[in-house]
Image (cartoon, rainbow, N blue to C red; front, side, top):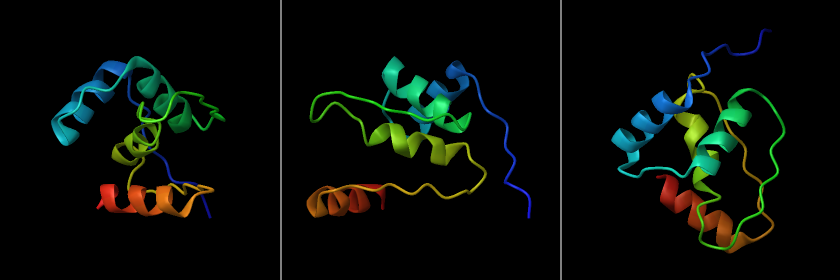
Length: 87
């Protein structure tokens, strides 16, 4: 079975589609993190609570050809919050 194929967008295209889809303009670090994920690179991000770390995991969903992203969180409440916001 082959891996799903998709075109990795540039940062400008990502920013425009994200803004038109979510109504939010992402920060540069969110775009760069999402881009690295789409390039199948490992990503490790440290930022304060409420800064938008979960958003950087949603961004690749717009570009990965209906693929799946698995998000593992150690906190049940964070998992429920993420699930509800993604609906």
